[in-house]
Length: 456
Image (cartoon, rainbow, N blue to C red; front, side):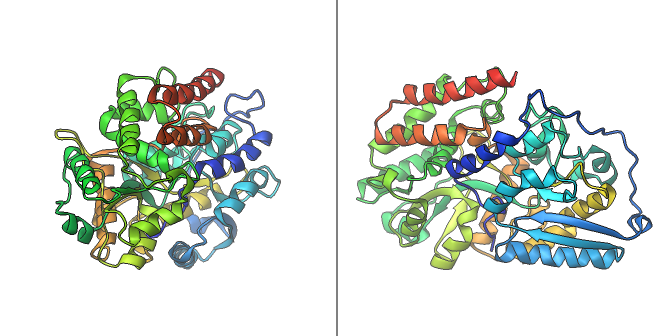
């Protein structure tokens, strides 16, 4: 069973508040205080035994059940392989890590390896400040360029000044993957006489049939604001060219939210809301209430990420399945997704070669098998794993299908450091009918344009 990925995906409003505090003291991308980037011209030592005794300090946030188990197993195996290496692990919750990491990596006793959120407010700021090492020297030796497809590498790549997200050097290696798709209740579909949709057209027809039968088609709780980002993103992924979504989500200059395709996506979400496809009072329902309502059979569908799988499987057993969003006829499968928090090497590490060997060890093919055994969703070699039948197998297959044969598209709140709050609030207004699609997009565009202009 796949556990919620280590990002603990993710209330942008909450995360943005935490990261905003970090940015108040951080060197942001483009800041005049940004340090010179660490050089990528370095000799690499792969004979780890020849390094002598090394203490490797690792900060992670793998604190939940299977997440912690896989780290404990891999750390023990790494130390067994390299007896000269001692791992000192500091494991903190996601929130604790977010609030302490900035100070930790600037101290005189910085950890060697840290998990840093992929987004601009964390990794982007750290890259700009020269606080993380570019991984290219080790990537060439260990073959990380081949381990991760480009659809995954983009999530850990920045230009050395931290301004461009999705391009440039790799600054971290992820272990786990995540993808947003459609959970469905087979028994409820059978009761309603609905076949499992295989195209986007089928899916929309299923929603209409469910509503006509007196059922709320899609569970959604949006009091936090962020759940609707995944609904909008799922609709957008089917109606907007993939390259346009990627440019917007990575905050690239020249892109715009006010295109005809994005307008169509916003109109579709508003149309679903007017048609009663979401629960009444959706903006007053929290996310936990929504997935729990789905687990009780109150709706045939739930749009959300693979992080819900453990709780849903525990509540529903075999009566819950998962699929990537069924694409429009003739289009490849496209879904929002990405990675859990990647592991990075700090510039303050006095043992970068040992740290690189550690990153390689916890992300290699053997590690992916350990992740599977401990209920996690591996970001690499996903198709080669054998998860338990049912929901876990669906989750693995969906991620592999999108990452390897489709379009794995970035989270929309990556676009700017404040986009999670801006878009979450605007979507609440759109769904409530308080803001038309064009005004919703203008609100989002204003945040986006201001950031792009400041980012230079």
